[in-house]
Amino acid sequence: MGRPIIGIIGNSYLLNDQYPVHAGGIMNSQAIADVSGCMPLLVPSDPSLVSVAELMDCCDGFLLTGGRPNVHPEEYGEEETPAHGDFDRARDAIALELTRACVAAGQPVLGICRGFQEVNVAMGGTLYPEIRELPGRMNHRMPPDGTMEEKFELRHDVRFTSGGVFHRVMGAEIVRTNTLHGQGIKAAGPRIVVDGHADDGTPEAIYVDGAPGFTLAVQWHPEYEAAKDPVSRPLFEAFGAAAREWAAGQRPVAVARAV
Image 1: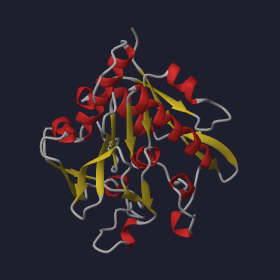
Image 2: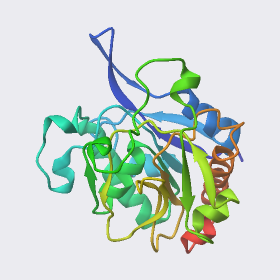
Image 3: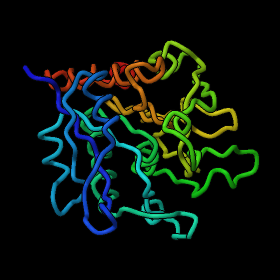
């Protein structure tokens, strides 16, 4: 049997400000191939091109990646404002429905940054348009200048629930992470368990309560140097293990079994 296939949810861009493309960060594919031990497959995130049923049929799990466009606030019942930034409604249409379908079926999903926010919105949660404008919060955005190493520098701690899902996955109650996001969770969806927070109280790690499969999501970017990072590696390894179970026809019955 070949490697499990992980659908990597791509983003829409204009190449040279003219040519439309679907694209995904190479580091996402490297993390899936090198750490999860799976085959990365970039998904064109547009419901006019692919359907949720087709994607679930050909993939064993999904990586909901980060991306500059934000989930449109209409998806969680709020009005659009300039603070909400850019949008990708086609990705919204695929990713939110796909997340709900995978949660119901138990098919593995790992959310990163925007993907973390998509999991919350898909399960009925809401988002703040700009975390740094909230009293007592730090600036979680990526530094505008500098090298890749500087942009992805480990900048704050995340504390997990003692004995919880992420504590078990990481083997540590407190980890150090990067931070490259503007938005964040306002209200968690009814089944969303916030299992980790930054020092300023910002939710950083979640899963779906009662989901039959792997439904973990993080607000930081673990794909950066995932093979070397002691926080990223166990997360992608656990995701790969869940995908191999799915590919082998094994269906977990509780989120704890997926990790």
